[in-house]
Amino acid sequence: MSIGLHNSEFKNPVVRWVDQRLPVFTMMQKEYGTFPTPRNFNYFWNFGALAMVTLMIMIATGIFLSMHYAAHTGLAFDSVERIMRDVNFGWLIRYIHMNGASMFFIVVYIHIFRGMYYGSYKAPRELLWMLGVVIFLLMMATAFMGYVLPWGQMSFWGATVITNLFSAFPVVGSHIVELLWGGMSVDNPTLNRFFSLHYLLPFVIFGVVFLHVAALHITGSNNPLGIEPKGPQDTLPFHPYYTAKDSVGLVVYFIVFAVLVFFAPNYLGHPDNYIPANPLVTPPHIVPEWYFLPYYAILRAVPDKLGGVLLMFGSILIWFVLPWLDRSPVRSMRFRPLARVFFLLWTACFLVLLWVGAKPAEGTYVLIARIATAYYFAYFLVVLPLLARLERPLPLPESISRPVLGGGPLPMGAAAKPMEKA
Amino acid sequence: MADNGHAATDGAPRRDFLMLVTGAFTAVGVGAIAWPFIASLQPAKDTLALASTDVDLAPITEGQAVTVMWRGRPVFVRNRTAKEIEEARAVPTNSLPDPATDQSRVQKDQWLVLVGICTHLGCVPTGQRATDARGEYGGWFCPCHGSHYDTSGRIRKGPAPRNLDVPEYAFTSDTKIRIG
Image (cartoon, rainbow over all chains, first blue to last red; front, side):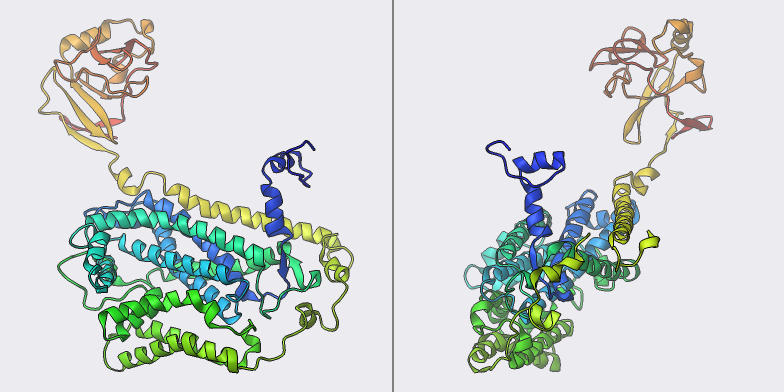
């Protein structure tokens, strides 16, 4: 080996030649081949990989859609209909993209739930968690702007209502809104910039995902027990164990995805969005896409314009400080009998908000939304800080391998050997 | 592979088999997914629906030419004079760079229909209007690289390798044609 070259362990001469100069193969082998991963993952740990795959599906379908889409108020709706009727397989690509957004949110919500339940946000993974919240916020912005592009009634009025949220801020509010619109109302300049940003942000997300994964590979993955691996007997190489497990999850995921795309492609959408945008008539019942409903419910639960907007944004921003609100040293809710109940109640509240967000803002629905909103915040601001002091957690297992393999820790060689390829 | 299927002895052949099956399924899956994406880049149905163009010949007087749009490209329709037809037929076919008789390039003697794109590098030759440069042979002249076409649209001089193409067309009545 000559001086200045990376010391590659690859035998294939072509791979070796590249790897000595740019050690991407060594890097992939280290991060995705031999990467030591806790041996006790359950299927909740599939959802990071599923989210990554969904991001790539969205970028691929989006690039192909943009080749046929016209970002102009006079052309946008018709160009989308042309994609559905005339472009070869345009219906398929658009339905994958449209339902891919829903699947992305389902996957990411489960991923976030996993992180909250198993305490993946706690030290040393605080920054990893915060980067995840950044990704989620970027996803919300991207999804919102994407929904505007078909320029149907829901696109137009969704854009109008959401951008008007910013008018709640005193003094600067109306200026912010005008800046967002590029005019006096949601119109062609708005559509143009939303298209530009909708194309840009997924690549920004990709960059933050890279940081998210890089941070993950410094701290290593959390696991259902929430205790750190104590040695090689507690971990498995990522490949083939978790590449295989992720593949199983991926196949099941694709089945669900395909059922949605092929048998109920408009189930999660709203029929009003197949009516061209009309700035003179608001549809009688406007709702955001289902994945925004919990925040929409929080917005409507507050009888004050600014207060509602602040609580709505606060409901996600509060996730940033979750690692410092929950000071309990025990990560996994499996060993926190009280926190577990309160957290599952919080999850139920989230789902109630999702449900009530689609209902008219009147009568008992408002009351239900208010109770759920109150508990949503109380869980973070009152319950978690108190439980860190009051709760007595169950005893933690000595190591990961012990409850899995039974008895005392096995000699490390014996545990791994029979699984290796002969 | 099946002869040594028991993992207790040696898992290698079975694992190889599983790897091959997985690889095969992945390859087929990737192909099945790539297909609609590549197909979406092909001309769409509305684009193909514009594939034919009708031209009414009645208003085109003798010696006049019109240019119509067909599949996004210009098509020259020329009502040739008797002199132009005669010139086109007088030249010996074997002296041409791309030998073709005038008769093989028209359906009715006076009507010449051509794709108006130079066979050299795709410019549109001049010669449709009476004031245009028509080159040394009275047909068309490509200003890009100096190709001269005669009154049958055949290449006579210059870098173009072939005669101007004759599109597929048919007379739908005495005074109407459908191109494509």
